Amino acid sequence: MRIVLAIAIWALCVGGVRLYLAHRDENRPAAPPAFERREAPGAYALELTTTFGWRPQSAEPDPFSLSGEPEAPTPPLRVQLDGREILAWTRELKPGEPVRAADIQGVKTGKNEFFIRALPQGEHAGARHAVRVRLFRDERPLADRTFWTEGALGLAETVSIEVEPEPRAPGEAEHAH
Image (cartoon, rainbow, N blue to C red):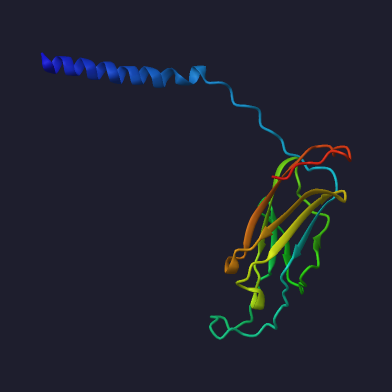
């Protein structure tokens, strides 16, 4: 009798789960419509100001390199927009002098993320430094943030902005997160 009762309970549980799985998608709400991201109107520019400097070193062969060829210096500043590189600074960098990337392409309506990587090198490595990031739309500021490097680790930060299809009135500012 116990065997029959165990089989009946097992069949009831398995049957209930099967019934649930067969009908669970019938009451699920429809997926929301896909949001189309279009190119945002306006001219976008990015300005970076650092408290550290950098001078490209002469490219000498690395004695430990497998190829023996001189390697390109690692840029102290890199910026990516949604995974696509928009700035890799390879020229001399002076403390306090702004570095500007004008006419940035690929800014879309909705959320955009700028990934900033700053790596102080040489005499500036290991110390704490600031990097000011300013983003402009039609020469009006959208975001203004200052980040600090963490010693020898440098800086790796993201600036997120929400871009609306049409620019707001001059008195209204867009939000940086």
